Image (tube, rainbow, N blue to C red; front, side, top):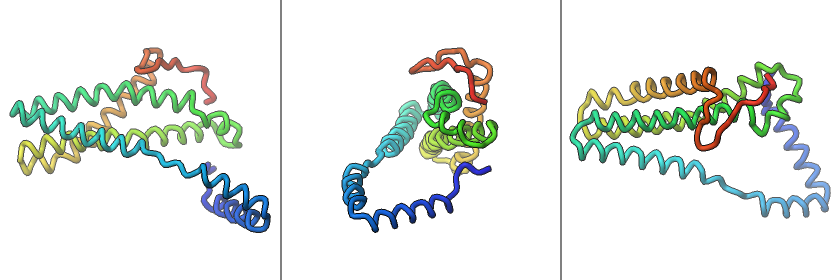
Length: 191
């Protein structure tokens, strides 16, 4: 069972537009609603700025110390800190997400809902992969080595997979630990 149907959305969207076109009252309400609906999310801009600043900081660290090992240690510290934030994000997504109540009412098996929430976590954790690409790319840039530039993508992917594995381990085995910045104790699950 799929939780998302583009064809169904298209049919409903067309039916709603037709109903609005036929009714003058609905046209008026639609115009009012469209004035306030145009909200733009700027969180992705902030996140890309953080990623770029991380890359510049790691590059500056490698340039100042003249040791790529120091910059790699900075990347490891960044990754270690993200383990706790991603663990909290995973636990919130699995146990306290806003859409869990609505999803539990669907005629879908619980493991499908679990996989849906897990996929949302994986998509969100891709930003950590971009951070790691920026960090390893900065180290390779400062090292000015062709081999280091070739190794950026595999190293970032392996570090990201290690981060995700550590998050899964923390969420499954150490779920009662308080993960910053807010403590999340898992309640009884719907799964």
